[in-house]
Image 1 (cartoon, rainbow, N blue to C red):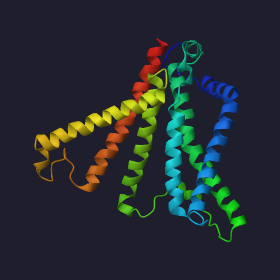
Image 2 (cartoon, rainbow, N blue to C red):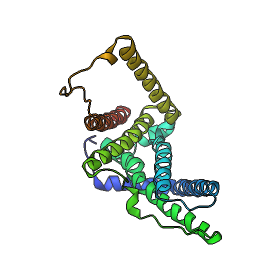
Image 3 (cartoon, rainbow, N blue to C red):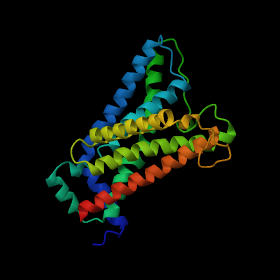
Image 4 (cartoon, rainbow, N blue to C red):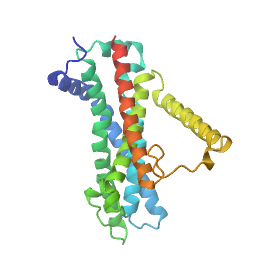
Length: 262
């Protein structure tokens, strides 16, 4: 079978097999996610004298829950790689490398970007209405459009900010995804450790360059495009770097899966 062939029928069979074998785990994980959200929102509301959560709290908790649970879930992609026996069985499945990679990407990153925010929105409202029954406070519903809308952003910067946020989320998830493809044991822990080491190296290198080599005292002309000094140009550079990093991480994950197939 060619590794470049993509069959929609086999791809859908992968989904069917996955949900048949993992239905109970998926239901328990969904229940745990919803339960943790309800408990945390309830404790936070008790801490503010039972006042209902508003839009600001909604978006803050949304980012926190989706990021944490998203990384935890994506960090355990390619579960068959956790043992030698399951790896052999997974590689024997009659599906191409592209189909298996696409399945993992869609089931781990694509689906959670849709389901986790929606489940949070539903749980947020259930918790708000439940508390309004037992208190004199009135809970105001938050429109579902606020799952993607960002407040107080000037119109001329909206596309840039949305691109930056999207790039940041995809980059964080792709790091966990690639780590799961590379490491056999404890992939999430090893991925976080590797990221921490890279960040520490970058910070140390930057400190040496800026402080000891005197680069911090250099004032380049503003028209130099290699050194974006203006805020919007700097954000554009970071956004491009995030999307480029995401593409590189996904390519590494694909090559690692193909290497295991060989």
